[in-house]
Image (tube, rainbow over all chains, first blue to last red; front, top):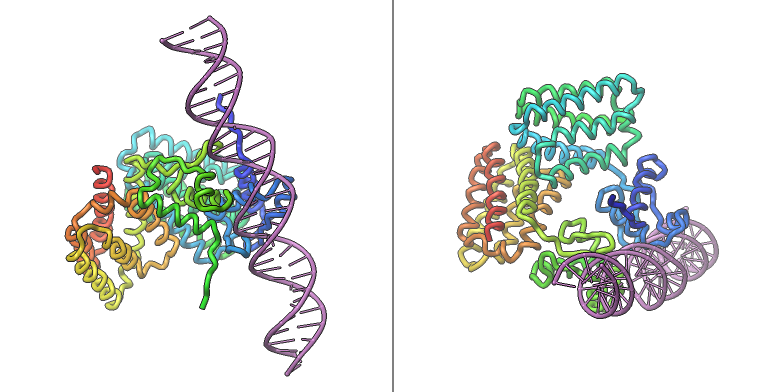
Length: 214
Length: 214
DNA sequence: TAATTGTCAGATGTCGACATTAGAGTGTTT
DNA sequence: AAACACTCTAATGTCGACATCTGACAATTA
């Protein structure tokens, strides 16, 4: 068994991510090292490293000598981030869809079925997030460009899973959320490559626009 | 006049980038904080921050408790990075090419003319790098997704301008380098959107493959 | 000889302290 | 009242020190 000893920095990064997701730190809010250090009873060094990590992740903005703040998203930031995510995911899927086997299709089918079942019981989207993750990962199951996959996910997740998590939860009804994904899966089954690309871009554009509208 | 006093960290990052570009630090080489600190006569704190920055930029890899090394690129890393850069640049150009005005076209024409002139005098590609930068920036002049532009450039530049700079210098003759770009410009003038996308992807794929072949 | 254990130098992760800087508040001048 | 100078506080950037960990080499055992 391989046991991991996490460094303080990475644990702190996780904690701050969660604080942002849960709204304990909201957009534009200044993040002060001494406060966090005191609260966690550790020194500023690991806090600084964690904040730097989050800065490069896009959750935090930094102005030298002025401090760091939770990233304040403009409408354009949101649309642009989802556009990048969509472009990458669409390219990853359309470039690899030709290679899908029957098992790959079955896997997607199972994921969609799970999502459908989850949507039946859910009252909001909180339980759907994992299914959403799973759906998009499955779309990219045959994309062997790991860098692309990671960048695509990150570009969207930064917003939907953290900065705008609470808004994201209210974007769709569980049923509507499921239906949108089922619709995409449908054209994937047909290996209709150009339509898959278009639908993915539309999918992410809709999400971006709905977040803005809230 | 706005004069900026740069922080140590960012200066150190620049210095290390240059060391990597010039081969003073080569791929896979361990980067040790105490050595750099002694060499620059500063403490380890700014060095650590710089190295973290470079880690997220993709120039350095980090293993907790084990240290950092100059990133060792596999062939796949190279191909994947250029593929991502190509996908983003192609999407950025093809999505905005319709809006190009006559002035936009003239600007590209001027850039290509400059590049042609530079290629006439050059013996290697070192003087062509700025023209290359300029060419690709001009292609994206009407792309208003700033995030996309930055990610596209970074994905390629990390390799061609730093990790594989010396190899990059020998990939093409100056004339051949110019011709490849002129060829792309030609279809841009015609606003032949699908072909532009295809040529950009081929362009970057060729670069990746040539780097690997060296 | 090969494998295991013990030791040691050097590197990383973390700490507490200090100088400098940014920003708010106060007071002064016009 | 507005503009400017002057505090004062709190946060950042940087420093030097320490504990812990890693990797290599020496010593030990089978």
